[in-house]
Image 1: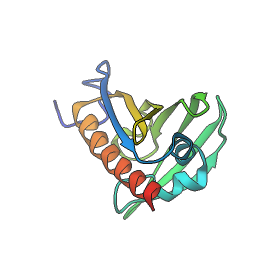
Image 2 (image 1 turned 60 degrees about the horizontal axis):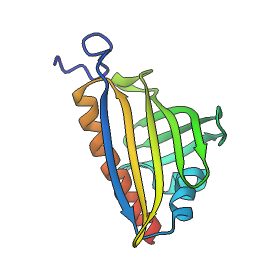
Image 3 (image 1 turned 60 degrees about the vertical axis):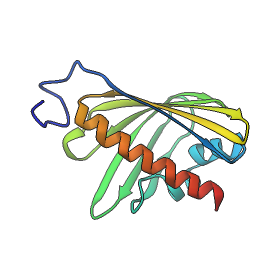
Image 4 (image 1 turned 135 degrees about the horizontal axis):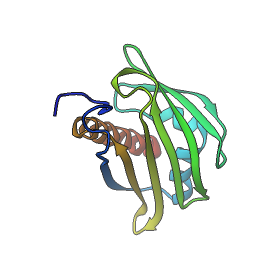
Amino acid sequence: MDGNLSGKKTDAAIDHVINMSRVFAAPRIAVWKAWTEPDQVAAWMGPPGIKSKVDTWDFRVGGRYHLTMQEDDDHPLGGEFLEIIEGERLAMTWTWEHGVLDGVEMVVELGFRDVDGGTELALTHTRLPTEKAHDMHAGGWQGCLSELEAYLTA
């Protein structure tokens, strides 16, 4: 590995994948709405210490979204909604518009199901071009899910 996060040259054919799940002590509809309503997404999306602003949210298959994670500087990203099955499944492209992963299109898939004690969210992030990009996103998603948990229990 050469330290290149984008993998545009050395690892372009490699597809690193993140699979994680978490159970939230909240009804499935509440977890679904937290992911699909722009005001709710803005309230929790991002690891601790990072706030998000939703710029565009056309929630339909083929619709586009754009948000900006705000820290010391802005980290814009956007994509297209690929699949929406109300309360069950959501898939979207995930493309950073900043930094070394600028323009690298990845895919985030979410599954929602009822379990004892609440809702299980299964998250799969594919098309991560390098192991370093995988590790950074895995940590980011862990932080995001912690923020989501705090938001849902507030």
